[in-house]
Image (cartoon, rainbow, N blue to C red; front, side):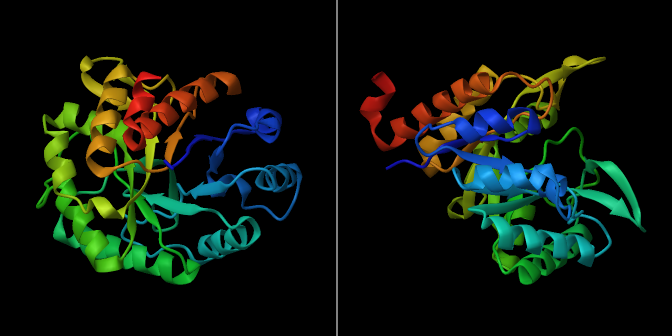
Length: 279
């Protein structure tokens, strides 16, 4: 049986997600939106978790930063994991805090040896406290920052040192290859493919000033045909993985997201059962 596809969950879709009965549907949330003591969001998530598996996709630990992960933030992670027993947990190769100043963004990490040491330290801290393997997502890249190694080498070394897994964002892989003029096949060949525990698919848009010369990871549109094509190539090489349709802006209806989810499921099924591609 092939892995199942899921969709990112937003409050606007709570009722539709609760009522959905698609086979194998799973949902992913940002844990930072649920790090509260009580209230309607937790009650909704309790009800949804009773019907569907969950995955927690963190955006606030700043694992790529100079500082160690915030202990209070980690404790909130622990409480959510104990409450919801997620199928997978994940975070980003990015940073968002420095000296107790927090930025509302996922900022780029230079591919340097010093950054690698700090990142591995922070991933170790997260995994040790949570008692779970974390999947690390590859970023969308827009320029090089004095890199001493390439991204694939950086991620492979992180996996080797920490035992973490990888969350392969195919949209980010496509954007980075386009913006930096690199080959996604070369990237894929140099990472530990067995470590990939989840895949993300999302939308991108051209930069407002530079147009198609620079693609921006917006999560505000449907998955582009070029990303679907790369996704098909990826899973034909590494095999199917649980796959998420990720949408954070310009939210369509839940039914629209589920239609994209169905397309992702057909791709996954076609790898396990080639005849499904022609069904």
